Length: 299
Image 1 (cartoon, rainbow, N blue to C red):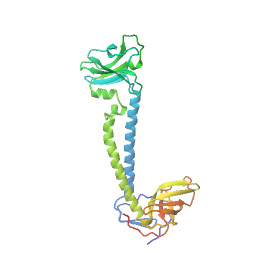
Image 2: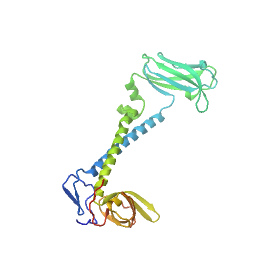
Image 3: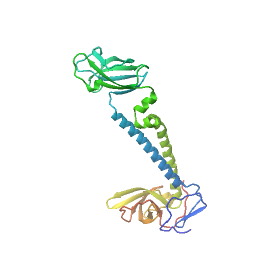
Image 4: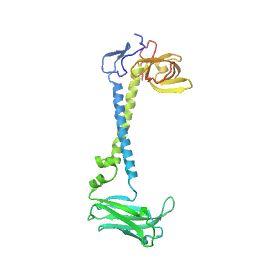
């Protein structure tokens, strides 16, 4: 068995479908799939899906905040329940009138209620549009005949559309206007897809871990600074033959050795080591055992 060299010049993107590959004198045999590249591809896909979800959510929130509460968007033939504040001098719904209604529009006041939080007097009404209403923008005002001062919550801007497609293009979230895909439908597809990709990434990462551990290597998954020393965590433990106090070689993303570390503590599957060199701004990626390594089986 050849000893492990201190420098592996090839990047760690191996485990390919080949009979035998050597990296720093270390033979990698019987590896049927390039799990490194698969994991990277899955990670990129997952990041793209997460970005899409974020874009849809942000777009939806922005569109909600840019639309006034008194701005309504309805299709001809559609009905809607709405609430609003009572004019200051009105006490009953029979004291309310609506100014600006066109032919085919109907607003019926249902009841007078109290607000949920402050107990403010409010009204509840239903608005109904007939199919004969001409599409356009209408300004409605709800008032009383008692001389109450105007209230901004009683001025309604009503957008009437000919059909649902026209409403989609004229209102709602910007992505929904351009793509025709509503937030709910997008999340129904993207969220399950993200969950599947996360599961695939976990499986691919496990295969990478098995591949590396079988040859005395492991990726660094934790870097923690404590006082004047830096600790690293990696997926090699007692099960893989590592012993406490052993020195391991630390390399960067290119496979170039940047220093050594001393193993401080171990579990069956993981270890913690102290770096024997200042980390500074160096990017560390992987550890390997300094001694000659005999491949072991990893479950």
